[in-house]
Image (cartoon, rainbow, N blue to C red):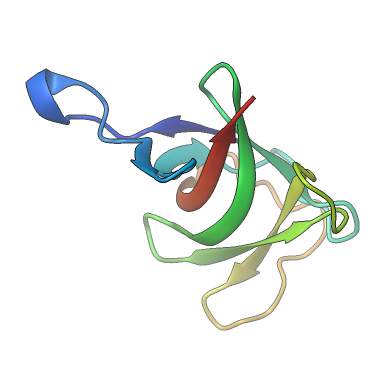
Length: 113
């Protein structure tokens, strides 16, 4: 999933990223995958050049039907984050579920290359 920053900050610009020391808080939105995977997940990336996802914080669909949990692929700096999708009842979605009609709000910490 590629997440786009939320707007309207000062002068109508982006609200995020919001820098905190050498990292930034980032909240954005993106659509779910056409076919969900319960084994490899959906790689999370940011729609801003020169940024990487440092840590996943939280995520859910805006219609309230799904939550999303992010797991790093390794315990290393700048490790990709894979997303896994769950129903609001807590069950992991069935493999192959089409979530492309759902918009998700995602919060994470990002860093710059």
